[in-house]
Amino acid sequence: MKNFVFLLLLAAANLPAAPMPQIVRNGEKASLLVDGKPFIILGAQVNNSSGWPSSIESLLPGAEAIHLNTLEVPVYWEDVEPEEGHFRFDALDNIIRLARGRNLRLVMLWFGSWKNGTMDYAPIWVKTNTERFPRMIDAGGQPVRVLTPLSEENLKADRTAFAQVMRHLKEVDGEQHTVIMVQVENEPGSLFTDRDYSQRANQQFTGAVPAKLAEALGKKAGTWTQVFGAGAAESFSAYAVSRYVNAVAEAGKKEYPLPAYVNVWLREQKNFMRPGEAYPSGGGTLNVLDIWKAMTPSLDTVAPDNYVLDYQNYQRVLAGYRRKDNPLMVPETGGPRFASNIFYALGDFDSLGYAPFGLDSMLGGGKVLDVAKAFADDCRLLGPAIPLIARLQGTGKLHSAVEEQYLTDRLIPSSKFDVLVQFGNLHPEYGGIFGTQTPGMTGRALVAELSPDEFIVIGFDAHVQFRPTRGSKEQKAQFLRVEEGTFADGEWRTSKILNGDQTFFTANLPSHGATLRLKVMAY
Ligand code: DGJ
Image (cartoon, rainbow, N blue to C red):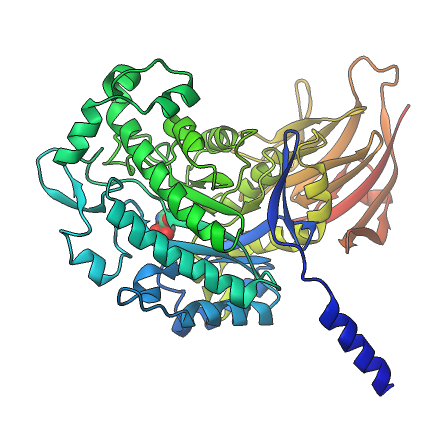
């Protein structure tokens, strides 16, 4: 027996390390692979000041209670390099150790030169040496609280620190890959000014747009104003900031090539669109996303912090950032509908992950607070279905059906059937029987087509029925079998077969949620 255990240990020691986390592309489809398998981030981001050992430990049981598989945690430049060239990684090591104990993955957020369009996380030795580490100058000639992206010295300092962090990560996590992704900077760009108005910046601004950029954008050569018109200042900033962030990412990836992204403070958030005022100028907002894509080969994606409140604009943002050259990921979100919006992100826009901001405010006294209960229910149901969701994303066979105000009936297309998902009590009206509204607008579901007559439906507070698509010779549909169950290691496990009152009119998703497997026949 002893020998056997020894041999097992020996075999384990010789096992090759799990493959690196990576984002792979297959035609239009992008997938995040963790340990070589498709993975979707069901995450949350901790508060800005909760990466410290004094805070993080108490949050982890809550992460587990919400059924998260990933935590997004900041690593602070001011902590990592309190004196120039002296590095310490205690906080990062502590987070990794704790996450491993709970089987959680991590996304590490590098709060370096930028945090919410300011320089607040730069170390004191950077903040106080304004000669060596110049700030942006506003149109009135005054310095603002933002490092200029035009300074090579600023870039060198940030790049050096970030490379050290990544080198350390490789040392401590290069085999286990608890950290699966890094965010390079936080909402870069400038608040308080639309561009740098220093002498050096003005000279560059009146000069020509770099030929490589003009070419990549398919634009004719010219000055910034000639090429970009009213958007010149913001485009000039986007070019400078994206070039800088890319150089930081490149230095980090040279040490340890984890998937990397940058997050964006959106201009759609308040529908008040003055760059440098309502949102940081030069960040990867949709109006300058092409500039960012041209300038950031070292980033895997540019990701929206989607705090947009109305569902149509929320989806417009998801659609804007899901591009062939830009896999969608939602690293931050919030607002009253975050438990519903995950269904759009994963079901309709192929998001690689979804993480509401502020884990701390989802928990109280070690418990999941009301505000996060619905999201915890989502993660409980969606977590086991990740292999299925990841497989069907990008194939047209996965859709969401989400209840919104006055939107109580959703018709989902599939190869052979129209799937009608309805919310609230069903009520006859001219034209048929319609949903009314659930009291809390809590209806939400994913509809996955396994084959033309077989479906998985995952969700809450909804009625589901089928009709043969228009034009087919059959007019009606009936359930052959409705199973309730879940997935374990990607395999379906039936817990019971529903029939009789439970499926007489429609199949039903209760308030506490269910995963149904439905076999349907047209006749
Ligand atoms: C967006 C930032 O990226 C986060 O770090 C945090 O400050 C949130 N805003 C707060 O809403």
